[in-house]
Amino acid sequence: MTNSETEVAIIGGGAAGIAAGRRLRATGIDCLLIEARPRLGGRAWTVTDQSGFALDLGCGWLHSADRNPWTKIAEAQGRTIDRTPPPWTRPALPIRFPLDEQQDFRKSMSELYDRLEAILAKGGDVPAANALKPGGRWNNLLTAVGTYISGAELNLISGRDFINYQDSEVNWSIIEGYGATIAAAGTELRTSLESPVSRIDHNGQKLKIESAKGTITAGQAIVTLPTAVLAENERLFSPALPQKTQAARGLPLGLADKLFIALADAEEFEPNSRVFGHTDRIATASYQLRPFGRPQIEAYFGGNHAAALEAEGERAFFDFAVTELTALFGSTFARRVKPMHMHRWGADPFARGSYSYALPGMTECRAALAAPVNGRLFFAGEACSRGDFSTAHGGWITGVSAAEQVIAVRQGRSL
Ligand SMILES: Cc1cc2nc3c(=O)[nH]c(=O)nc-3n(C[C@H](O)[C@H](O)[C@H](O)COP(=O)(O)OP(=O)(O)OC[C@H]3O[C@@H](n4cnc5c(N)ncnc54)[C@H](O)[C@@H]3O)c2cc1C
Image (tube, rainbow, N blue to C red):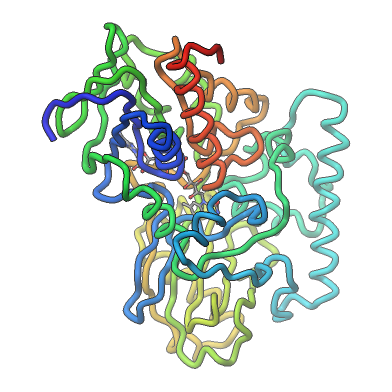
């Protein structure tokens, strides 16, 4: 692509950008999806392993699946939805974590939410960690689980944002991959891949969007970039939009990374069973054994722990996992496992993290980020959602909403 023109430019071809593009296209509005990577999907990314299994390196769970728009899209694409309840809603293997302790831990998790609600009922905001019981037995494991949920430790996260998350508690998955489903949903859109956008000039009558493949002229644009990318790129907009940079900085991307491990003699374990590496520390991983019944382990790392391992390189994740797994299952277990696939989302220049959380006191940044500018620049992406942030369906919902704002403005209706 060299210089080109479109009615609406959509910047970023992840869940939000694809949703916006589909909504505009359905209304007959010409749009162009401008994506930095050589593929669609963004933080939704399915790769295929040697045995042909689809591995989701980014989003895997259809959270709030009973009201998640991607469920219907996956079904329309002929995909297979696995409705098995997720491992975290069932007891973990009782290895070094007896069932009565697991029950006590689950109770402390629900008490954490109750205490947070009680603290916030008085108004204002506090770090989510303020609701930990002082000296509580499970505080480290609660914080570790917090890093899986939010990508950051509970002391960094806004307690109000944490409880704003809306969860129908129905979680399904797609055997052929969530990432593959999202990318396939964008195939009919006009797309410019490998076109990182470096500048959005909104000085003149038309927007001028500078990308690696040329300048695109557009009447309006929907910006769906991850907050970490927006936060570090103050000069993206010309004139600058400091309110957007500030909003993005209030909503950093937490870090979560997955490592897929091949497992020999996997039948020893029940499909979709789970263990924590340790129950007494924050720097531990959660292991899903035999996801979809496959001879694999999906290891999940979060927060500062994931960041420290990213700094050491991919091998560090596997070495860490082997140390924890051999401590649980014996030294011979090391011979049964081999690293397969992973992606370091923090090191990825087009993500710079995994999913957004709000800093304490910054919950309103979600609405500030989502607010349109001068009827020409519109914003979407998981971080713009008040209650479905950090998810692929949050991406979809905000993408559709931004497209509807564009349509309203074009029809002369007020927003
Ligand atoms: C390990 C991991 C596990 C997860 N698990 C789940 C889960 O189970 N369920 C769930 O719902 N969600 C999960 N998520 C979160 C989910 O993947 C994201 O919330 C969602 O995909 C975000 O969609 P988006 O469109 O808002 O952003 P993105 O997918 O990040 O889309 C933004 C797009 O902008 C592009 N871009 C960046 N810079 C530029 C530029 N300069 N110019 C042009 N394009 C650019 C990016 O390449 C990207 O394609 C997970 C994420 C990770 C990383």
